[in-house]
Image 1 (spheres, rainbow, N blue to C red):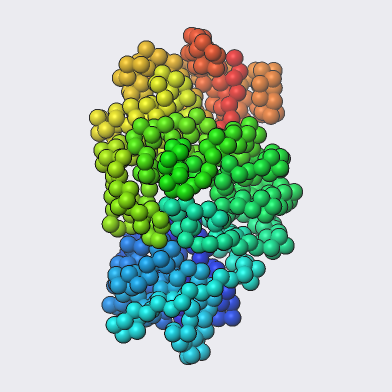
Image 2: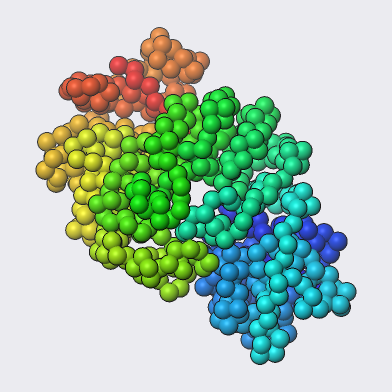
Length: 574
């Protein structure tokens, strides 16, 4: 007997936590269970062949928004080449319309919701030859030409679930996912969490034991899948304090939090964290009060804003803020306001997402009420609404592309901060940049890093409000290029003069200046400095308030990065 648990992850570095949860709970049958993870970038034929070669008796797919279309096609073909195999589906994408899923996909069983106990009962029944589907809660299954839905399964006490990681070697170079709670106290209508009632938590003792495993093994990053990590202040504070007190200096922990409910007690704990220990994802979604009320978000942006600023002042936590376009009552002008409200908070990452009408969500049920038109197939993304025309959505898509290309990538963070000052608002800058890309058809091709900088410089030169400052902006772009990469070849518009090489050696040999400006490099020989560092000569003093024409000498250290921004450190020598 061979039972295959499989998933198509969005990226190789991700791990399918659900598969490991199922196998761990069915520990007594682990000799029969194997896990195979693929990605959505694998060819479907490759996945089909790999599964076929395993010759499993049972195949279980973990189904989500990003992989359901591929899984549907793979299952259809598996049933043709392995007609006797039992196929089980689980996950958010099939849990809330399970009967419809079986009508569309030729699988045998859908495990609805929490799957550990249900999978265990099915596995035990198969291996002991006592399987009786009608007696198993939490499933929808085929019986001949009939689809039958059994009663829901009662929630499991979380401490009854075993820790899923053991051999850390098999997870090298991958992100590990971990949960300390299930459920969410909020009722956001775009989210599936609005369906579930109540929140369950792991005990403090159990959480400490699990976290210590990650710390002892120097895992690079752990992402909590808790839907609102700080839903319970005591629970969150306990974990934050434990991680600060037992910090290994390596592991980063990512949490999704609700910022406006953070209390000063929590903030004082977070203030003590090592730079880079924590990374927060904070969903703003909109700053339009009517929109927030419609989606039952129940957050205070004013409070959120103050908390985000306070955390930023600590300089130790990476913050990722989100907006969603396409929500009820948010038109183009309103979204512009939301964008600007969030952008000025200067998060390390600013995600502009688009509403997805998830199965089971309140907004999907009320789509007609709000005039939301969305794609038929996953990912069910909004196409237009009463307030946002299709033209508006597509224009916002291009703005999203510009934010990802130049802001979130960090490619032009210094330059953008300066250039935005010539536009009425940050949104107007990204809108103008996006329009420029479309007009010149840059969106139709892939571009190298240097091409992206060149396009940006051309935009500056061709835009009325910035053209007269192009020489200063060129110096900012030069700074951005060197803090991101140890570049050997510059584009023609940034070519350096030949005599600059000789001038660099003069600075590498100036031990007094190096010790004064970059003391950590004082033990390096000039030759070592030339290999580790780069010296750039700027024609304008972009670090001064008036940006006067004056040569500035900057040393970039390619052996040292900022923990939060991942940018190389630099030092002004002159």
